[in-house]
Length: 250
Image 1 (cartoon, rainbow, N blue to C red):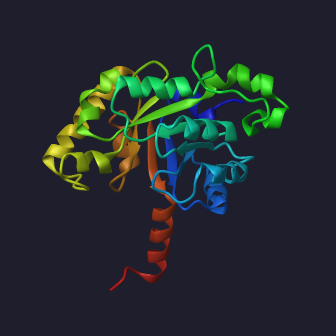
Image 2: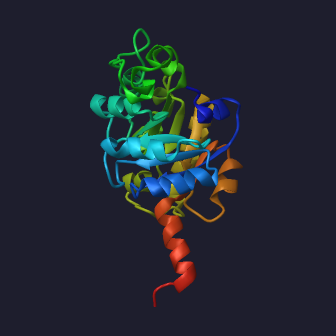
Image 3: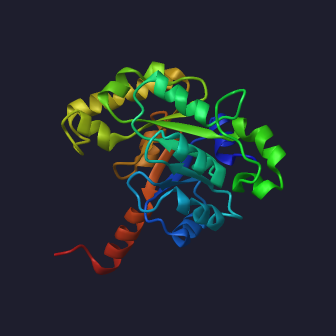
């Protein structure tokens, strides 16, 4: 199967995504129909588990939106289940070393390029109907995103950008927390470390990605070289829509 998002990123396009934390396939269906390039189903902080992922994938069928999943850790079990379910790619939080990044890449690819375990009956291979085609193309199609979320990770960006890591994705919340300034995105030190991360990621040639932490973030971030910007979340859209009707709480 063709990974539309990966193709767009390889062409140098800037892609817009939406974070999905409510674990509602109906919400995923609505957002996929809205035309986002990607939806990120969050199973680190969001509700649900990888076992629920297949329902989101079915909800997005018929759309041009690519479904990614953030797994809780770099567990072989979590990576395998997410990809076997049919996710186009994974995001792994808290990556801090070249060895960890290489292990993630290996677990996302079948031999001889990696160590991913194979089965002919998985959903990603249409339950066996196209398993040979899937095995032949999966290594090239999978999208691997590693999150940069600490000062230690920022200092090792050039090492973490191993071959096979498609995107280094800055997690501004935990990165600010690692500096002792949780959520203080306007702080001068936080801004300086974010700028360093941006420069170093761009220098690696990996896709620079992050979430929008301020109004107008998509245009601002894309102007600074970001090519994968998650500019909204399902929770944020619902909250803002509700407050737009009833007004902010007194």
